[in-house]
Image (tube, rainbow, N blue to C red; front, side, top):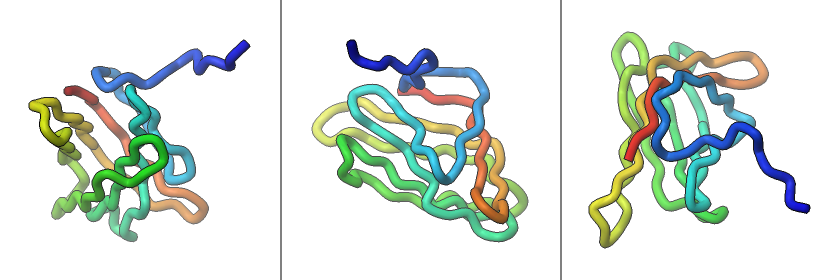
Length: 105
């Protein structure tokens, strides 16, 4: 019997959640979003989006005071997009954290 995550994170989700730098955010269809780094002030958030273990996009979200921006990935040859809106980010001694307040297509 396959092990099933009781709280899967789908591409469309309006619940607020926190992700950390050590654990990828699992999305539908084999996509995962990872925090690569956050600067000391929490102003730059470097993210990578992977599909089935391969990096398909990498972005740096920059904000002057806090991270309040959206990671957007447009799927090639389709009109579909993956949008993840970040509310804030914090760099910790052992791992970094970011708060997401919306995931949509």
